[in-house]
Amino acid sequence: MSSLSLYEDRLARELEGEDFAVAVVTATKPDFYKQAPLVTAADDAGLPCFVLHTGQHYDDVL
Image (tube, rainbow, N blue to C red; front, side):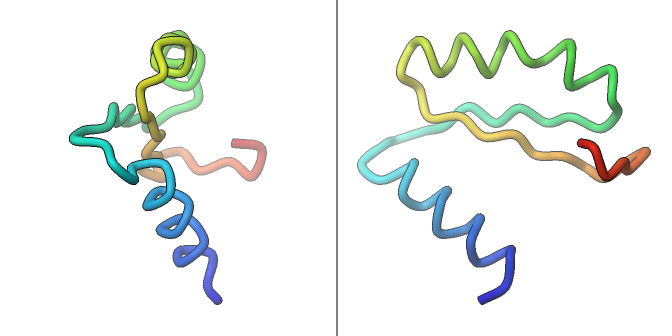
C-alpha cells in the first residue's frame, strides 16, 4: 500500500458522514506557524480538517 493510499483512507474516515471539511493549504515553513491556530480551532470545534502541503521549500522536518 502506498503512502498516498494511507492518507486517502485516513481522509475518507475523517470525512465520513460530513458535508464539508476545512482545508488548510500551506507552502512554506512560516505558513505552518501562521496557520496552526486554524487547525487547532477546527479541531476544538469538531470540524473535519486537513492540511495540504504544496511542497514548496520542502524540508524533511515538516
